[in-house]
Image (cartoon, rainbow, N blue to C red; front, side, top):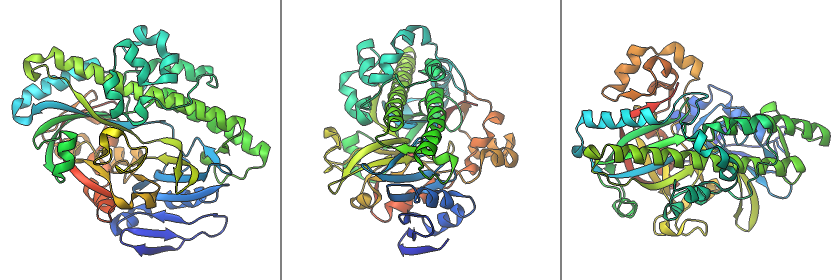
Length: 470
């Protein structure tokens, strides 16, 4: 395929063969070299061949996935297009939440910080297939939680009305229903309040650098402040929904004669029965994920209260909670689209009508974590974000597969790279696939969009301790 440079950090693959639209790439030259080592560009071209597609975009963190790459955006015409479970992903509404503490780095000695993280790790189950200790309490509420998200948790004392504005969709993705779910999917709702494995984490950071003083002040971020990131999603519940509907969509496409380029891009017409049922199920998984991060937030808050001797008992406030893997209807320039973001986030400037009112002066925070040994960033949308259908990258992006990382790195190399940053929840040899060297350089990734006015840097975060699952 021919890749044409059309501007700084901006390339295009012109439509050819069965493609119905061009593929836009937002990559710096070093990142462009990396993505040509896997099938991510082919996967984007496959997405561009789908019925009703309006645009396909590759982000700086682009890497091969299932169906479309992680770091991929597929924009469908809302009237003529398709909806694809694979283009949303297995971990529906995987996302990141940033919690602000009232503490500065010097307020806690290193061992005190580590004590606190051990306490949190002891309260939140990690790893694949784990069950929440709150299962017996929340079991009878799971249907309503899936259909109403964090809003329902306010009735259970696990969230407050005032913090809903700090959560994307106010923590309640519309149109959710558990009616279309398989019995197996319903069974996998037992993981509410658990972290999971893979790239999911809870991380204690310090605000290392402020770039935009005005936005940082608006977000109540200060140099040296301790903050906590929570990265998790809909767990086995969302995974099962993706599996179930990928199979159903394949059958629907065969029945309707819809041409699909790969199994991973199984899709159905948006307004078909299968398409409508998937939207309901996806919304239920999205609400489950918002609620999952909220329940973990409450556990972390209680851990802070339990360690009031260390923390002073100050309440942790949510800066923002942002989603990675969702499809949503959006109107751009008077045209209605269904925008699939897989490993990409929606980024709205302050003048966008859907930007939360509390962030109208700045645009809402965009949270972009790196690997567990590197920087993370708080950003806002820049003036050129509209060119990307209000989408930006969700993280650093992998540079090698999990299998390759396990072969390349050992415990000693991981410990050397992590230095003084302790890992809790999983033993180091259980997370070799998450070694920092398995990821792209987060600074290079963030610079790619910041240098062309798509994002603005607000703050840089440095890790102090991390909780991971195997």
